[in-house]
Amino acid sequence: MAFYIALNDEANDLLATSPFALLVGMVLDQQIPMERAFIAPYLLSARLGGELSPKRLLEMDIAEVEKVFGEKPALHRFPASMAKRVVEVARIVEDTYGGDASAIWRDAKDGEDLMKRLMSLPGFGKDKAKIFTALLGKQVGLEVPGWQSACDPFGQEGTFMSVADIVDAESMTQVRNFKQAMKAAKK
Image (cartoon, rainbow, N blue to C red; front, side, top):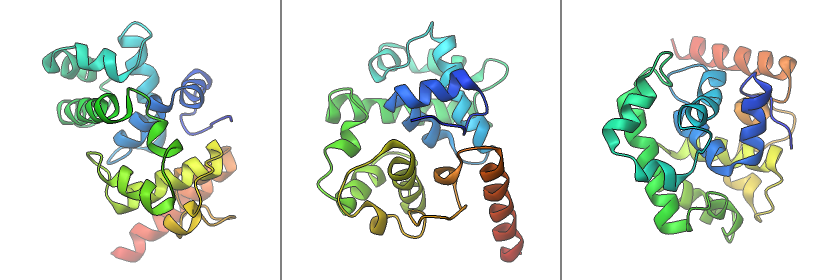
């Protein structure tokens, strides 16, 4: 699997090889541009000396994690609160899933179970859980029965609604256009 979301080859490689990095990118995907959210795990990994894992984050004092998030350029518009949220997610991944973020989706019995697992994570509401499920299904090869119906409409083929649909520059433009049209319709 190859990602395009972060607009940076090394960051996209990390997303493709580290389920925890992919999860962190999704946690951070709010109130900042998509590519900024998904490059953040790579930048965080670099700031931590190359290791991004739940265990590594949990070994650190929360004030130190906040400091790392706040280094220029900050990893998020709200570095302190997002540092805390990522550490909370790391704790759940470590305590509930043995440090293996992919167990969240790999071991889900069906799409509904996966949605429940994701919505139990800090910062994951229904739409974010649906979008992440669609991302897993469309780009990671998720094999959980019923994933598409659980994340409807984001799991539909041929749509350009979210990060789940971004595979190149053209699809990124289409997703941006869709999001702008949705914002305009709300006004």
